[in-house]
Image 1 (spheres, rainbow, N blue to C red):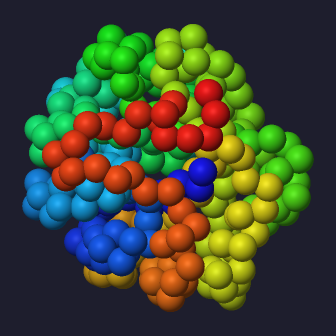
Image 2: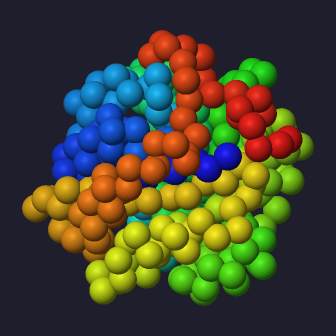
Length: 286
């Protein structure tokens, strides 16, 4: 079960447009949306049209721009701290969990109001959802908010042997895997599904063809494997928000050219207003 997920939907208009085009061409399994950006209200309306064949998830954001509600401890000036500052606070145990829990709930509310359905999955911008002080509030909110069918929580770790076999961006993959250690077991105790296998870490080196990276990412996939990607059409706003600009275009072009993807990747098959994905029945083991 190969789940090809495009991150950062609604980051900018160019990123959203590229992901929408790939979804229409059946080149993606899923996308994760950022509900905190100014593009979300408009972009989410277009995204709903793909829900019959695309899993739609929340890309929980705690590092870019402004929160949806007051966070006097984390964002006293109304802006999230960057990734490194957030990670430092998380590892030092200084995050205020009730405040984090409140923002998670607000972002889920914004997703569900726009899409009209619960998210199929939840992951975090820059993988910050796995950090201490964020992970437990996220799992608690999911467990209390959803019934028998719960969103999948992305586990950005994998077996050491698989990471080593892929070699590309091995250091980054190992660091994230160490931060995510124990996530699957913690989620499992709350009957929250996770993926089994993860890849897609990139050096974002424009000298390396993305098709080559994609082939490496598919080495030793897990039974419910998520492969993340970051396609986009570069625009002026993207250059001010993110260091990955032209590389997003390379990913988009390679994915659009790969006609075999439609047959290789999993996609939901439901009415546009159908139920959320039931990951335990969709395949890939327990």
